[in-house]
Each structure stands twice: as C-alpha cells, then as structure tokens.
Image 1 (cartoon, one colour):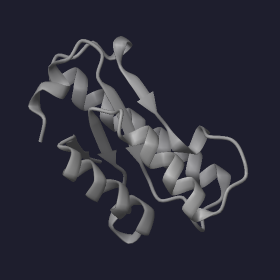
Image 2: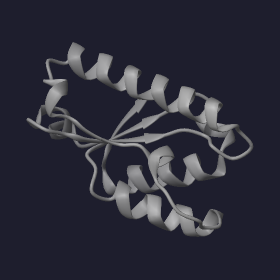
Image 3: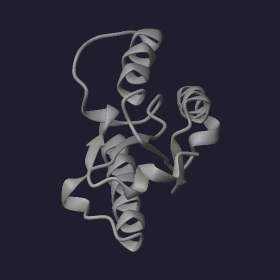
Length: 112
C-alpha cells in the first residue's frame, strides 16, 4: 500500500460501493456513509479533509452497460491515492474488480 497517499496535502479518494440491484436512494445512502467513513478516518490521521478530492461513481451520468461503467470507473480509479471499500463490497463483482485493480496499483485501502 502507498503510505504516502494519506500524507499528501490533497489525496484523491475513490469510493467503492455495491450499486447493482439497489434503488437510487439506497445507492445515495451507501455512498454517503462511505464518504463520511473516509473523512472520519482521514481527519483522525491529521489530513485536512477540505483538500480531499472524492471520486463518487454514483454521481457519474450517462447510459452504459455494466462493462462500460466498469471501464469508466477504472479509468477514474487509476488517478486516485486511496480506495474506500463500502459495506457489502465483497458481494459485488464490480467492487471486487476495483479492489483488485487498487491493490495492483498500490493504492491505500480503507474498509468501511
């Protein structure tokens, strides 16, 4: 894991939460909880969370199939320093793919 990621003045954080089979309100709640968890953890580490850039895939717009969304998400992930795995991530194929890519790239992993 890249320990320097959380020491940067403005780390870029990617949120990974299950989305398939959930309503929009469930998705918004899951990503909101994931974001709050990440900010609490970063504050506890002394990071100024006002300078943190958060990549929230639930906010992406457009029409794509699962594969198209995964390719888009992975392009966003590759520019991040930290990935936060939301609750239920291990039951989501997309989240597992994102975790594997993050580990291969040496990102810091947080678990909600």
